[in-house]
Length: 71
Image: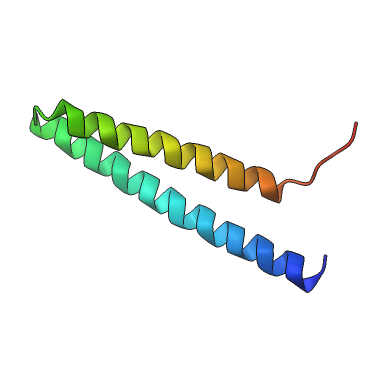
């Protein structure tokens, strides 16, 4: 692995960690809103949608770290 590849992978891992942290934060926010009985379902729906987008982005970045294996 070249130094450039190592740096790219390190950058990707850092971004994954950042996105996972944001995902957990949104999860906590959604749970708090639901526990408080807040009737703002639109806000809850938006937060859940953002969580799904983050999950997809995380999966995409993790795929970049997995080498292609030709069967």
